Length: 97
Image 1: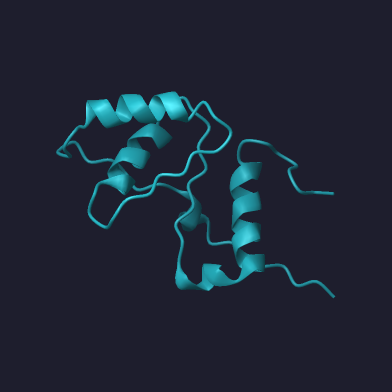
Image 2: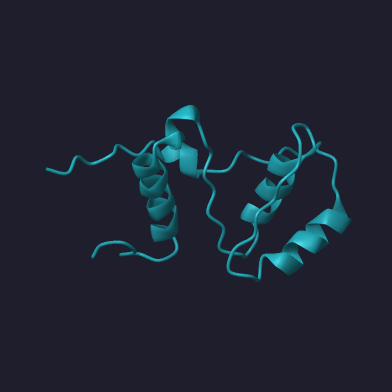
């Protein structure tokens, strides 16, 4: 018997961008170029501005899936459930079969 994994919807919403954040147009332009690919991974150390940069692009016209990870996401079933739910926001019915 398969048990449904409860989805906490706030994990699929990016943080709100504040007006007083440092704008980084060069990085924003570079990110807009690479998001045209099927998958883009942004990797940097803590405090380098990943969340701020990605939050800005999330509110643009690109289809972005936001997924805030937590320790429970080490469970593959939990991770895949959240990932599928994020994809369903842009592709309704994804994973139904």
